[in-house]
Image (cartoon, rainbow, N blue to C red; front, side, top):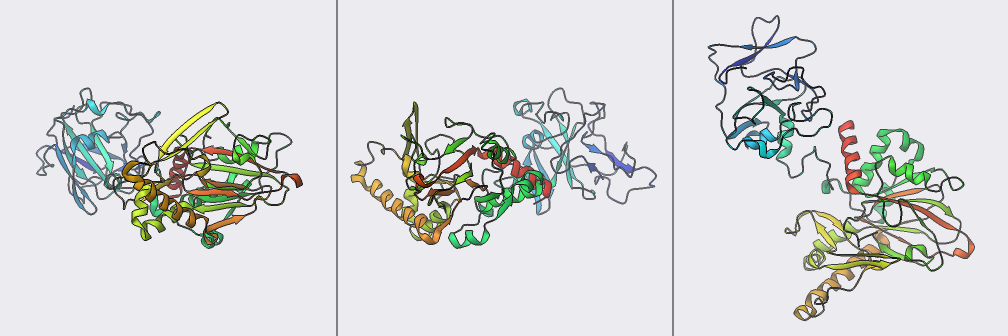
Length: 468
């Protein structure tokens, strides 16, 4: 064990002396981006951060320096770390809890080996920041009153980039639920210009093409896959499953893991008729409505049935700008969505517009809820409360929203041909279908859903892979 007051200096073997100050150290880091280690240290009593390795081109050692004139920063509960924009004070518990060394996070499972509650309230740290690294600057922290059972001299090494990220509302290391700054709000003309078709085989084989596809979903919420194989004679769901599972695990619902959109007698859902189906989102009556929807066109052999898409967030932002009092109604007035049919009973009450921060009317829009075919009766007191004022205001807001999303100039319309699969953000992009003549041919789509976390995880991994 090293004495707590030992002063350490990094020395490159063969060098007569260091060109940098004693407390500036050179490190080469395993996965400096996340401060993750991939191997368990051979000697867990090693007092240095075990995710820090010596450079492959230099053999480096730590050397005790007795009587050195250099004095390390004092141990304290409030630790000042020199970031690129200046010093920032972090709580010692926060920095200790963030440690990712193999003693603290299992390299195999990536799970923590300690609880936040294990950290002593009186823990103190002393931090130095490197500035001569080949890969990334690190804040290296020595501990006093560390978690019981940890070796004396246990160190935490955190990339400065990581600490800067924690100062942001959404850290770049987290799989985000949404990213407002990336959004492209669109009308029909914009989507016509920006729309892309991704080849099925390239989508399956190329991570870069997959990343491009998910980026389009992130920015526009709508993308198309072309040249999708016809597998009706073997397994009708095979192609849409392959497209969805290229991203991750699919969402199973009472409709099934995959489901068919085709005209049937005595349909239990308006989508399964030949009638016009207005702009809507799916499953707003569920607590966790799916994020992505996949629709693979397997048969398009009847007149009519054109698909319509509209950007609900574009429409909501127009209302926020033009009629803020109506936008307030959209974000505060509860609308009932329900499904009571075929042995199922679902019901949710939610506002039309949900914000990142529901208490801040200027906050970015997180998602929209709009599904008129599945709307249920309002709460019993809505029609009488304050003489029905709240309902009247919402009614005006709903009319304005409907007029914007349905305006011809705001619709992206196309006929889904066989071999095309559309993927869209079900919490942003509204979809509709024109009526079709089922007596003159077949129209058949195969559908699937996916939750937001699955999509966000894949997008985050690919973003890091391609450093976007």
